Length: 156
Image (cartoon, rainbow, N blue to C red; front, side):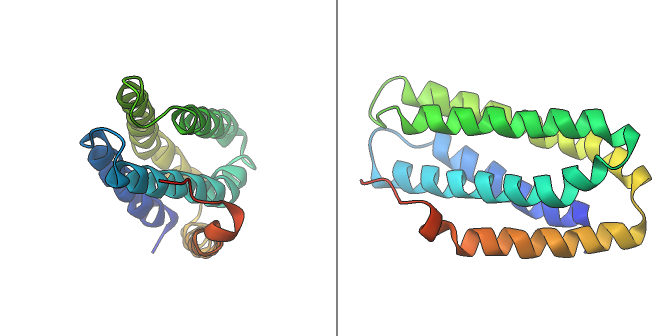
């Protein structure tokens, strides 16, 4: 597996969770559970991706600007997650915020897959792509396994 295939697996999960979240209505356990799952997926993916995709790409002059842009988008997504956390799930403002988050996530994933992957494909050797995939998968799995220790689940 190369780094692009590894990243796409999480991207598909993010798309699925986001779409399902937007189908929820009101302050329900389903909404809380899907939001918690999306929040976790976004966080562990960004952590592993920053360390094992974007930081290595920053070693190349051609990768600097796109990597900075992507990391900035991760920060914007984090801020939207925090805004959703601070909003009551029953509030009329919650679903529009969730839509805004989903739109930002979808924009980021599309940009990553259509622009960043092509640039990275030219900058990284096949061996690097495989090594980065292995490092990403290890970091991602570790962050996911340790999530409960690092974050407390919101009360339902």
